[in-house]
Image (cartoon, rainbow, N blue to C red):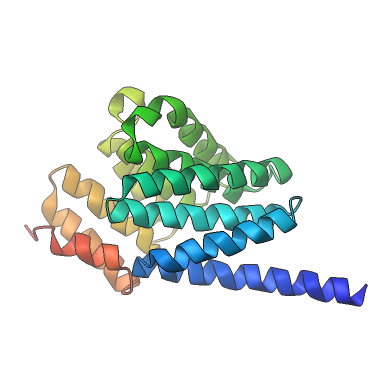
Length: 228
């Protein structure tokens, strides 16, 4: 009994540490580290198929890998990572449907397939919108859920209910809920630039980099955005 408890504690501690390291790897655009993490977390998830947290951590790692793949314009890799993550996220939702974060990560992954292949908007657009909306219903104060919905709206064509203006509103709401969430300022800046509001975009990206100086993609986006 004691040995089993220690094993469970060790696994939980490892998963918690993995979440921190995953974000750092995403910030550095370290695809090799994320690929290794996905491999290790897939093994953990297979060993504990009834553990919602293990399934969620695998989905989170796959989402970060898809995100970085999109940043470096490797769309096939982004699609493959997102598809692998969706299966784990669906499992996490089935095991623990009351967890808003599980719905958020499922919606994020469905949304990440769309920019990788716009033809997938027909298949995954509804999943992205429905899952993130469920996350918001379960936790209306989740700034990350609004960021996820905003990213989905940014990539989703207006004909499917998305668009840049809808995205900006979501990022504004995320910042209202958590003014120090660097991700919200980053995506607000990207959306503002797409809307032709370069000065505002530059300020938003500068604020994001101030909040999270290690994020490579934020620095890249700031450098390519005119200050006026």
